[in-house]
Length: 551
RNA sequence: UGCCUGAUAGUAUAAUGGUAGUACGACUGUUUUUGGUGCAGUUUGUCUUGGUUCGAAUCCAGGUCGGGCAACCA
Image 1 (spheres, rainbow, N blue to C red):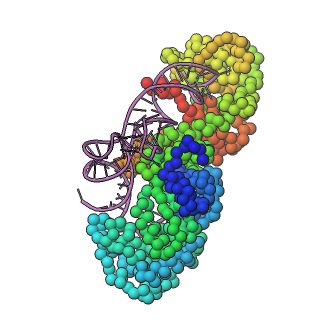
Image 2: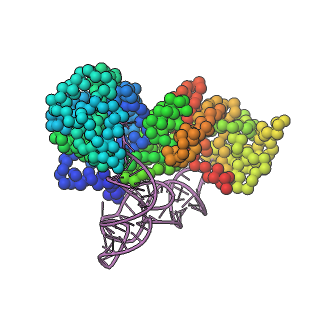
Image 3: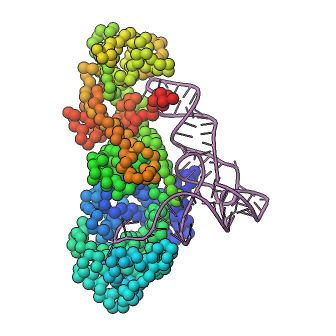
């Protein structure tokens, strides 16, 4: 524990609990429902729960909250486990709420026997009506007065499959007039004759969240059960269950969920993007899912760093997307291999370069002294970026233009002598002369230039495809915007570009992190092959020139 | 017109009755063979009205504004 770093309110509670001897060690849990892929919002919760037990000593269970068979699938279970491992966290136990179905059923019987639960034959509509409104008390019905014996028999029959879906529910008998709507005789069990991904057709009644979550926490003896703010009203029910069942007193604490500008973090909406093909898949690199971010090139370190920086509190928040970008740049800058790639090429001819070609050395990473260097072929004809030449340079333009000098990265200083246009008036070729004594590493020319350009040797260049991603949505606060969130999708969120790359990329490791100099950080896509290289742009570099131009 | 929550720079997050600090952003300057990186600096804040106190972001009372709650979802 670092002394300077202040504790968030949950860490504060835990240190007190530990100091007072209330617990010898803590046990937290991460409880996803396996009905979708994990996203960066889950990462916040994961880093919190696992971070807490790492920090204070204890453990974290992975528990699948699989009480609704109609939405849950094994595919999701597997993806969740893979994402968790990739993020770098190890759980103490892999648990499933469905493992506790027998126990939970027993709990329900106990409540019936205590006169605290009853079977209700009403329809969903009737129950909703009888619940009243926030300002008007609910009304009971005749089923509420059923005898314990009758409830026991009916509940047994529910389990035995004697009724159709929706015909009956088991309800807690609490208080129809409670100002907290959740305490107005909440439903504990419903009938669903659906196939469960783990228990198959063993059950046809399934517990509701409120009769599974706290109970599962208690069974596992979770000390601190941490969830998001919308569950605050559920806490009363959570405690009611523990008290009336006399089980382990886990405690629920709530923090505010993550929101990020220009993105959505709702499983329901993300599922919609996939189903309606606004994105290619759950792991589309534009998705804020862990798998999407992984494919795009985010590192686990950068995601953990992000979660660390955003903090834990109880107020609603919306984090700037730029903070996420900062975190990934910060990490990638330290580890990424530098390579040169030209996307929108024009030909550069060095008129006085007579030797034809040579092999130059270029550092792999200026941030890493041990990073080594690679061989880069240089020749008389190169590709450079169209944007690095200007026919009539504006002031403060440090690149190439008639009479201007620049350095070619890891090579020589060149001076623009002339240029050539095609019939349409588009510049095709720039002619330069080079300064032989200006070679990188042994420059004796004494010439200082302001600009350095990246380039690739035309005859050695390798074709690659770049997936350049932009934000998925056009507005900052997507959830807060009027109307359908899909109306705000950015139709420019993916640009596929053909580019010329230096040959080293062909022999580089598939999983290497790259910085294409002056362009951004890139990571090989899952569809990439040796013969057809495809790179995803993780994030651009900070571009002070682009900012200058906007002024 | 009920109940539950919350309110500190643009965005987050600290200060636990005693100097309002940190990060990201923005802006300056500087370094640099990436207009990248690094370094230095500047900028902007306690929702409001009262009260308690020598002293309030913090405690109390009222108000304002935001979020949540009436799924056989979690």
